[in-house]
Image (tube, rainbow, N blue to C red; front, side, top):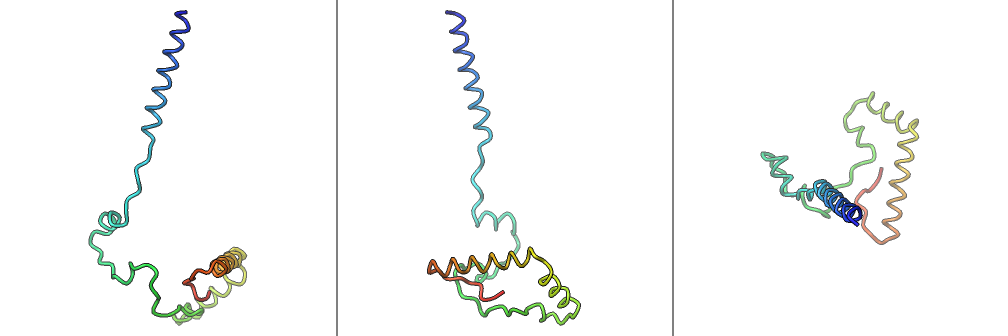
Length: 114
């Protein structure tokens, strides 16, 4: 009988120890947006129109926005990357697929073109 009583206390102690160890591993809640701004960017002044959600953009970004840099080498490199990189093509296809899902669900999609 004493052996069973000792086994019961051992199991109880092991359970209590396990609970104490697991509770020490609990995660803190993630910081809120204001706390992140305060700690991460204490001296940065972020324009208000950057922080508003759901607003319309001033204009769509043109598809050939890279050409605005006026660098022929950059244009050729981007064209080569788009032509020969299967990962980029697959990613673009997934973006188009997601746009279709949003459209089918009746939502608004901000991106205008690739």
